Length: 419
Image 1 (cartoon, rainbow, N blue to C red):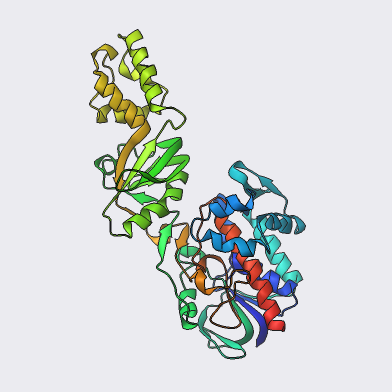
Image 2: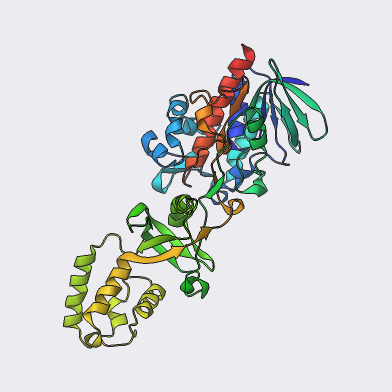
């Protein structure tokens, strides 16, 4: 069996690569070891499929902190706005939600996956699911893909789109790294990103805040000098093992990178009132205390933060909640206000890569031609999607990276295979 382009991996990047290769005239084979194509797409955005993000190109790349700048060349060929047009042309109407996130109007990931499979069928792409690849052999003219069944497939060009190691139940189990290394590529160290964080702090271990969500807080990762490395203002959640939620996922890669330097723990800071100035807050509540000496401290601060969090911070500062404000020292009030703005605690790790939404590390982008996704080391070899050392925040950024690199890889694989 022989094809001009063979795409290994049926996730977002592989689907786009196979469509692009076929649209550019190549006889195309799409292989996936799973029983269904688009498994990762089907669960993205909580099953609604956050297909891309409508923010300006520079903003999108800024939200891909792991080598996002490498994508500028690919974006000049096919970008996030082209993704929107692509799906509209396939009959999938999209709508914009908060922070530029684009979802299908149907609110169903199935409509996105079905439209891509329909397009593959229209183009005559050969699709083989339940087809694990055992090995890839590179040669001077054609390459050979050997399946687990020992069947051999000859191909002019290979697009490796098998993902990283995150979310392994979708089929991302790191198979492609060995094939990349065999072609001479460097695979940088792999680590979890967009992942919940672990903490040994007593209040976490005692589950005192378990299940508590804090809305629109400023969460910071601090360095050894207690200066912010990164801050994200979003929601967060306390869990039985540590912290999670959108702000935590975005900050997690910075924590993981600090821990990878050999640090035993990293300090996290929560500002639960990011729109308030600390000094003005202290002044305002000092005046309220003076005007309401018989009011209980809890009633004075009621509503400023969630009640459970207020109770926790009062106890932390050894303030009895039903104590009259007149009986509480100004120093304790100052420390309480400081905790509203700068509550700090340590995290010591993250959940494993299998629990992460995105893989950090991968095939080194230094060895990939940025405007074609072609290997600099091997003819007829292309990489796209999460197998590359590129990672972004959740919110449509990783899928954008996958679809852009997939489109560019498929297109250029077709051109090379036909030349």
